[in-house]
Amino acid sequence: MIYIGSDHAGLNLKESIKTYLKSNNVECLDVSLNVTDSACDYPDIALKLCNVLTKNIDSVGILVCGTGVGMAIAANKIKGIRAVCASDSFSVKYSRLHNNANVLCLGGRVIGNGLGLELVDIFLNTQFEGGRHIKRLDKIKNLEC
Ligand code: RB5
Image (spheres, rainbow, N blue to C red):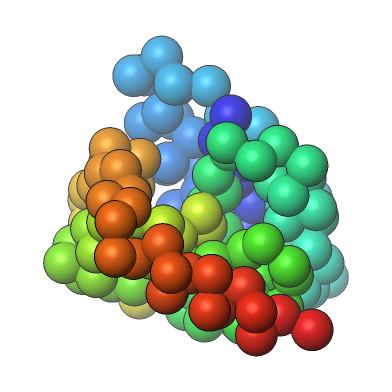
């Protein structure tokens, strides 16, 4: 399953991603409040999405805020979450290949919808390479409090 969430600043890009996934028959579950004003705090959405994700180990998440940065900082506080905040395809691709990233954080005020959808595509269609990267991820796991 793909979980998706945004605050008010990420709402438009998140809606475009949902439409795109739906048009490709890819199911996703929206955990956001869908408010357009600043009543919505991104750490609450990040926590909600990551809590569901850690209970569904094969799932991935997409979080959108203004920059993607706040969502990534919040998400990476949660055990088992490897969130990447990126605006370029190389970083997104390698976050999957080498880091087995399970949450993609995007900035609705940073990138356009076209790039956003392309990054989502790369994220969802690139698999973890395993091999020498496993022991590095184990070392990251050991850093978790
Ligand atoms: C909200 O104004 C904004 O701070 C938030 O969407 C995000 O960019 C935080 O990192």
